[in-house]
Length: 234
Image (cartoon, rainbow, N blue to C red; front, top):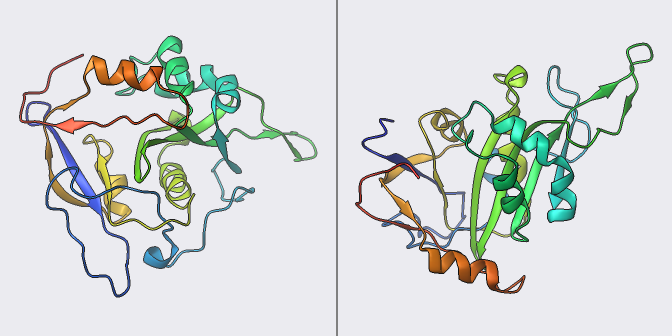
């Protein structure tokens, strides 16, 4: 989408059985949570074991907390290079990965013995793709930073990562909302997201950010808000 007009707000309404209270009325009106997606997609859950699909990384893992994510910081930098997140260098990634509210779902690069074909544990810093989940509040979940190594693109890895992240909890939700760029639209539409609105500007005050970083783990809440202000480069 043209940078002058903003980014689309896409929504996904999972199957809720007898509960017919669906539909997005305005940004922020409905809590966003993690969701078990099998009932809606009819697909078996993606597991955290080797998947064996040709051309795909064999292992998708969940990394919880800074101690699990920081060893891969250089790989996150490499994945974002040349993308719309290319401005995220090591200091920015370290700040992001140090947040207790962030969970990373990553596709581990395969270490295969060229003779026997056996695989070993992935080496820290070697990732083929990632998606980050951010716990914004008790019932609010954000997904972003869907990144795939250039040589692995076009093989369905981004979709597998998103499905894994969305199935990471058994809690149900009313809606899932995603703010995406033009590059991200095809992936979200394949996951049954529909356009629900347009966000031209996302903001968080410096005071909100400082309060967020200063608050103890488990008590942090960070809320974004939309406005009709024109987009600008930060």
